[in-house]
Length: 335
Image (cartoon, rainbow, N blue to C red; front, side, top):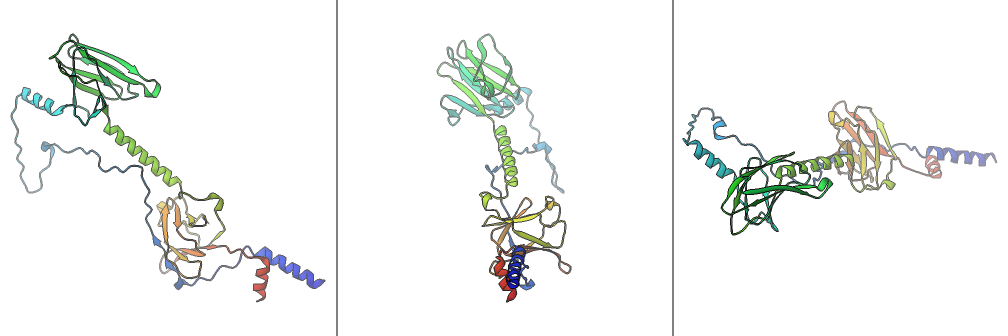
């Protein structure tokens, strides 16, 4: 009876101690450094080139040791104005048509051409959500100018309508809104007319792409890894050894990868390299990435070490807790 009670007590004691078994003995020579793989976050859009302001010829500095000669072209004010106006003028193009709408790329200071015809109304459509402030025309006697709107709420769109009373007329039009200013040249012809014109806005599109990339970066940084199965997460890891500032906060895996959560301020200190020992007991070289303050190891391991230093190393050991039954622990201890 006493022997039976002793056996039961031994089994209970073994079951209580089974959850924290002694750690595996790791030979220093059997551990090699894991290879670090740079984690490249995907962006929804890649911006190949952005507009840059170039120095004008008179603003360029000469190269050291060379002399610079600036030749000034003598022109009359009239010639200068004509040249500037011609270079700023944007004519309609076949590629710019979408159905009956001529779409110009908006550039501040450009002079957009609109061809109209007597008896026909030409529609100048502004950007959705843009509020019309004022419309000014050079010739308000032979040109009829009005405005209207379409849509509602955030899709509301202002329209400026123009119509000449006869052919062979020309004037200019300035439209001021809460976002920008448009300059147009109006010309009336007898043969044809532009039913509508509008603009696309490269600067706004670029700003939108940059904003989307920033949001994507924030979203990626907030996510450890895509496709992690939350119901399979295993936190049964022990963190032992020294206690440096970069000591891991926690370690877990999802059955495929191991995630080592480092302190939030890891970016302000030297990140330690990772050395691992494979599940078979042999040293294995696996890939790991650093995303935010997480080490992501593309392989399950039994034990690993984070080390810094050469002579006096700072070592933090990570090992997987091995689950064994109380009966197995008892037989191993008797053996």
